[in-house]
Length: 257
Ligand SMILES: Nc1ncnc2c1ncn2[C@@H]1O[C@H](COP(=O)(O)OP(=O)(O)OP(=O)(O)O)[C@@H](O)[C@H]1O
Ligand SMILES: [Mg+2]
Figure: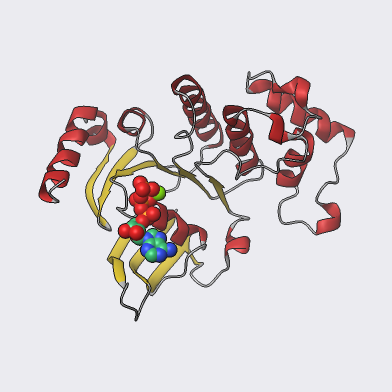
């Protein structure tokens, strides 16, 4: 379970460019919940993920993970318990290292540097099996530098890397947005499979309203740092893409767009 309590976020405080995004923002995501977050550009989705991961400081409020106050923990410490996949396929993997090396790095997350690449033959075999299950033909490329793979293949790898060690939370920030429609669909299905298999708690930011409606157990829409739609259970099951789009358009019209 992840809880954000009364979050205040001000950018460029005490300058002429000062803007307040979150005034008193609260959100709690239950263990095992798969939350999709939609909302227009600049509504605060990425900032929300940055606050959770610890890559952005806050001006007030608290972040709790499994009941523990992690507000003051730095990003690298939180990263042991929080997996994250970004929009850009080149961010989650190391290009000049092979698939096996990248996976070993993920497997040994949090261990001292000397042990980061330590891997025995059995583990190597297990990693190959894992890659084989992706069904992307990557099992024959275990010793190929990741930089030579396609964006979709790298995103698939980033996904399994971010969940290779047990995590309390998985953050996905438009992780299919840079992929062609078919590959995006493959990665979305793979995401759903991994989430179900591991029973993960997930926050997925997406501009794809269909993904937000079809996948996951809860859907929120953000607008200017506020939650304007929050649907789960039957309420979410009964929600269509058109319903979400209608609210989205209403907000845009109010903004004069
Ligand atoms: N480092 C920063 N400095 C100043 N303002 C920022 C910074 N990061 C974000 N903002 C502002 O906060 C608001 C929310 O940005 P954020 O990136 O969270 O939006 P988003 O919902 O992820 O948008 P998108 O769909 O375009 O990715 C925007 O108005 C943005 O200009
Ligand atoms: Mg964003």
